[in-house]
Image (cartoon, rainbow over all chains, first blue to last red; front, side):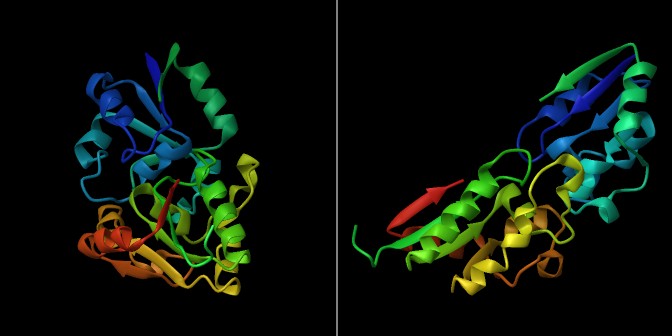
Length: 99
Length: 121
């Protein structure tokens, strides 16, 4: 199984959209850098309840904190620190980066 | 260059993912220090530059958002935010660090037309 990492804002390009289109249900999806904006409530947000029930979503705490988003994260997204990031890369067999 | 030209800095990028936000703020403060007629526009992901509670200490970046209140000290008072960009991100004026004027897309269009010089970041 794959750990998908996404690092672009969903408003900036279609990285997250593409990731969600091809990711298996059992895959992990980790939002880092500007992709953490996708973890907040936004109109036409890509991370619908359906998506969150299908995939395991993670978001990187230092990137959320930097952008003032720690208290804005949608329920159903697990927050991880840098150690958690490393643990995820070990837990999954490969990493696919969407940027 | 004539001293009475109007400048508009157009901010369309989120902070931290690139250097655009920081560079734009630097240019803005320099232009203001030289007494230029300066306005700022935040739209698209650029509105995220204005969010409260930013703290990039754990990603080893400078917190440019703390510099935003200095714009007022430099007499830069024309700070505009496009309403549609805020709405799309579920944000409103209370989520922002500094007082701004929220304008609709038609007014944004006019604002762009009025300028002598447009600087895009």
